[in-house]
Image 1 (cartoon, rainbow, N blue to C red):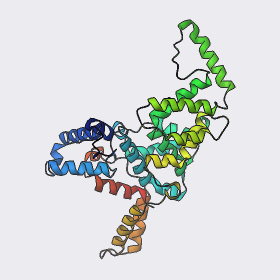
Image 2: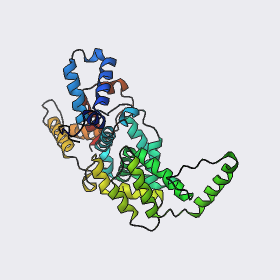
Image 3: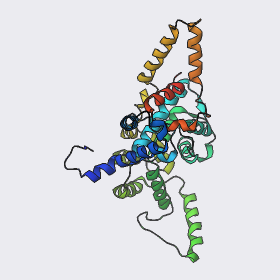
Image 4: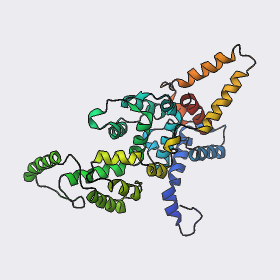
Length: 330
């Protein structure tokens, strides 16, 4: 939305851009840690806070409720996760669902298990969530599930209603005497329709739901394209196709193209400069051993014992850059 457009009401722009949310959080952080920021100055503090928001470093080490509060926060967290751990993709390592959750908790200490499980189910299906996953498979499934969580939860309800033979646009409230037979009938229908539902029916229901949904959802053209490619579709196959679709990646805007997602020239340049500085250090007995030690250090995960209070500090860009360098390059 163009903030300079006279056609956009002020209150609508403020609501859509979440400016008031960030302003409220900035004030709360300032009041909570005012002793730390006294020497910085209020003007500089607010400048650094909103600069970190712009540069997507503001979500580092923040609580889950803050990380998921706005679409920009969610996209920023996806990008931070990619930048910090893309070396896992470079190395070709395979990790379990719980290992990916541990990595997420290094960036967001209270990150819950359920979103990670949901992303793993897209990659592995329900009966194989303990298997190992590549970084790229998990990353794009996590991106879809994390950014569009509320929409996908609603689509699942629509899908389950279609499996049960209901009209998702009609609210059915069963009486206590007919509830048990209805549940039994639904289970029987699911067993008979494990191959999925009619894509055209699901497309119509999703299209109607998008008209009512007030939050972010995948591009309609992308969902229509996925649903037009098959005669029957399950909820899992629908999510898997969306996760792999480049239009989803472009719509969220957090990650580069899939062919380039292991490349981060900016971080590579920072690492090269750091290695060069160590290599020419006059006090170094062995530049080769220093560089080797640096590379070994960068391969380690960030310490989970890091002072959580440190995440409150709004020297965001330098802190965020250090965190990413410490944990993202190989």
